[in-house]
Image (cartoon, rainbow, N blue to C red; front, side, top):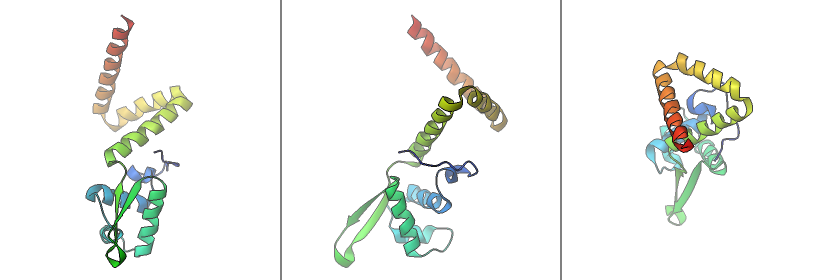
Length: 144
C-alpha cells in the first residue's frame, strides 16, 4: 500500500500522515487491537468520539487499518488494527520513495543521499560502504 502524498516538511510519520492520523497510527501500533473509545482516551488532545471515528474510518479507506466487529445490538464492539506493523510500513514507504527518487533523479539522488548520510551519522556511511561491498561480492560471484 502506497501513501498518496508525502509531506516534505513533515517529520517522522507526519511525512506520510496528517498529525492526527500519525497519532492514531502510533496508538494502534503500540496497542494492537483497539476501540475508537480507547484511541480517543490515549490521544494527546481532547477530541470528540465522532472526530476520532471519522479519521479512523479514513485510515480504513486508505488501506492502513482494518475493522472487526463482534457481538450484537448494544453489546456490539468494533476493534481496529493496523494492516501492517509500523516497521513494515516505514520500510515499504521509504523503499517506495527512494525508488521513485532514484528512478526520476538518479545522479542527483545518489549525490544528495551520500551527503545526507555523512551529515546525519558517520556510522551510516559505514553501513552504506558495507552494503556496497556486499553488492560487489554478489555481482562478482554472478559473473563467474
